[in-house]
Length: 207
Image (tube, rainbow, N blue to C red; front, side):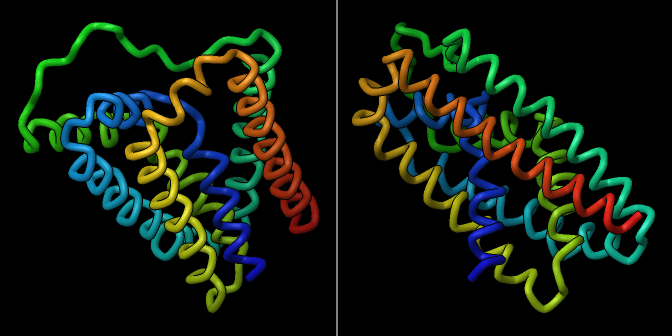
């Protein structure tokens, strides 16, 4: 259960940060256009990439102590910066979400899926998140417990995308308030710094 919760929180801290992908899903939800195909595309991409990170690349990296320690250090530094940006956003009250008020022409499901794939797979951060961060953390977990970590991470992905897509019309009035974004950014920063501390502690103990 501890590893499931760890995977749930780690993936949650990374996936909730509002970026191009989440803004696209939210916008599709608001327009009520191709919500299910878009959500499933995002989730399937996460299943493949996170699984590769946890069970594939993460396992390969865990065989080398030097590589694991190096990855933990890089991951800690990245998350410190990531968290600092979230705290800065919370302090300044800047929302990273910018939805156009103009109506979007209705598009086919295939075009929506292709657009989702482009937004997801052409973003270099998705590989850093899935391979370097999630995979690196999974590399520090015993092999027979990684499946629980993976299950927690994928549960977060499914819960987030379905909630974002179908709950968009309920969420958008709330997220128009600057204070909501401040609280969300603060929570993201807190989670990121907490993970960074645990990675730095692991690297120190393993060195």
